[in-house]
Image (cartoon, rainbow over all chains, first blue to last red; front, side):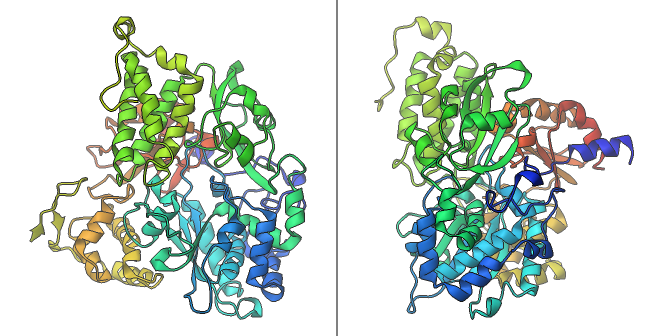
Length: 459
Length: 175
């Protein structure tokens, strides 16, 4: 290989967990213990050799769908896509019965939340774990068909999933009469064509149906009327990948994985990005602290200090260094006015501007608004314009109040879906914690002028 | 014949004339196969657009009614979808498409300098194609490569971290 080819090869992105084989085992790392140290696909033989698909074989033979849902409720697997809603409760609300048509299991593999790179690992290297989780979900929810809604840019994941689906079908884990149980189910890979909003579960269903990805009104919830009007369960990749271990080892065992760190059970794929020495991804007990994560990430780069951090994506609220000691779980982070989200920390260092970062985030949300409802479509570009003015030092005193008002007007319950409330969260928290940085963006002339009133319609 | 529309995102008329465009038989067969994966044929619409784009590099006007016919839906439905999704190109693009991640983690690790280096090297901005038709430059949502930011994709390949000094050697690979 020439020097240049070697250099280019080094630049190639390779997804990997930052925990060696020695650190991971079946008892403590239900998601990742089967990963190979060479970071390549865990093929069917390898997966089955590590007890893969035994949860399907045993569950379909020995448990009723109602038993599966009860076990999932008891394990309290909270939605790993970021919302934290109990998967078991969601399944329990899905309509099923002899008089109803069989519905769908849809895996949300549209990972596009800024700062989130966890599902990619499971999709590229452990697609059989996902397929096994989907079969169990289908059995519990009486689904006839599953779709993996994969973002179009995840080419390596598409390749791995295609291989795994072929292997699983050939081995009889998908198709008619799975493992002699009489249960039929198959999975189709559906790849997307961009747009963050596809990650919203009802927009995802519209996209799956070949329509523009505008969200749908709820109710009806997808579990009542989803894809093509049928009962539909939409679960995140990591959520579904937890299901086989819950079925194999039980709800009590799953609960115990967090070892007293959290009221929640299980592990979490946590990560750190930004200017740290060893950014990466780890499977750790849910409730692990930000301090431990930052330590695993080798601390802040270049001798700088931590200014603030986002706990789990662009649609979560900023937290301060003092919050690092908290358990990274849904309730603890929620109590601080933020959200755990996807649990992948983005670290902001002391020399980085919060105003600029918020401008970058709001540009993202403005661009990715589907345009369906007015507050989101027009409010988000408005925040961008105000933030750009402040970033240039050309803001007016009233801009800060207007940003605060917009953060409220874009908040929960004011828009058609959760897109704008997600965008409002970093904005609101940045204004709360870093007001002085916004004030520095007010122009000298405006600073000396009398306080300007809010425009008509103001608070 | 064209139908004038007044949609919010485009004043462009919807192509209903195939303008001599014929689906390649392999593409038609693939679209028909995809159609079978869903309860309704409309669901294969995005995949159909991607199939056409894979062959032509973009989705020419005449492909819209051609896809509509295979799926038994209206051309406006196909165009509405084609113009919604960022990875469906309704204008010609270069032989290689560069997608730069401009989301928060790559912002924190310096994508702006990377974007400037590429824009300078190729003398194009977002949405533009080089005069020799070699590259088109576009931003993209968080690529999920945040542990190796700043990240970008060129065609099917994902790279990261890419520093401004890597740009010329990286672009050389794509002729």
